[in-house]
Length: 475
Image 1 (tube, rainbow, N blue to C red):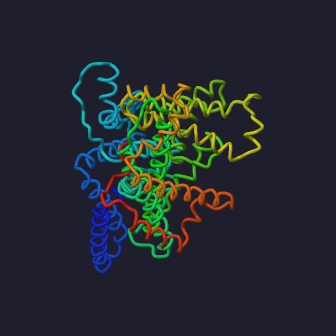
Image 2: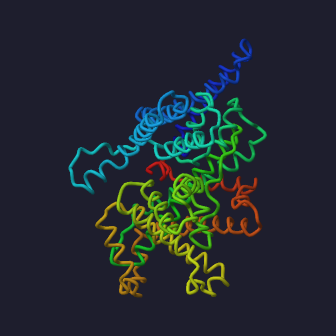
Image 3: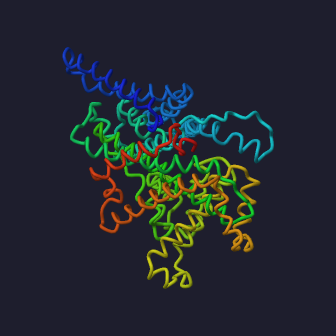
């Protein structure tokens, strides 16, 4: 479900128009079942969109969510508690099996243990990590609180709501389920302006910044011994992944509003954070909340003496969740250790200069998160270590290397493109900062009618001709 592709919008429009025609007929002859029929149409649309991506994508989804439904049925099973516990463990393992098979099989058995098992697949079903976490959170909440079990159709629609199924936000049942239960799968024209503004902003972030930076980065000529080259590569990726993932999230919010569903804002201008704790409150908000509620708190949170270890474990899980590889593990550990340091009450860490100059705090946090992206995007382990060692080599930062920074680009046309795209990116970040300073929602100033028209013009002028998927479809 690539929101930046014509195919997605074509299929969505066809499914919606077909659904409305069916519902018009049902309203005319069987009005009592109209809402149930609308829910079935919504589910059919989501399943068809998943199938259109790949039949395996649909099969993996059905496996995970139907096992989640079995977990919801578990309390009503009449058997001894040890048997229930055993069934619970089996269901959880089975529910996580596709995630392990498609994402971690090769890394665990071949790269780590050296067993030379056949590689499972280079293909990862779209959205697998997201709906697996959302479904697990759903049944944990219901078993923990003893809430009434929803109908199967509402549960399936909660799990498959198409704007957010493939890359979040990872919604909790207490927020999304009541909206799903009340849905009639119709357009909410009262939300049209807000919906279009979110969708346009998302497409601008994706098509103008992320996709163009992706095209430019493919042509980079890197000197691995030049630290300025490595930092520039990390900066480019850091901006690209933010504008790509935030762009997806904005489009998801806009689509949700169009159908009367309010989704969680998954980003709150994270690159303007003053420390790592604030960064993770603003970056991938719903993943952070999931890890907090289902891992950090059950481990004891900050109530126990080993709270620092709990934080490191949480971010280690975050790194592993994103992908299979030592780089993801290191990335998670870097953020976990950074969060622990920010949380420690150590006198020598209270730099007066940092406290007095918020911009310096933002800069330090941005530099740290930018440098850590190396371990996230570099899939070649040997090359990753060579680049990491370049970070630590003082000679790699000499003026001669700095003067060769422009050699990373293919030529003057790429330089002009880079200046244009970076200019747009930092202007967008400045607008976010101004919105935060005025105590607005961070993206409010970029969602005015005039700016939306300007963004449409810029999308037409600057968007690449070739389509590309969203980065987080790979995680």
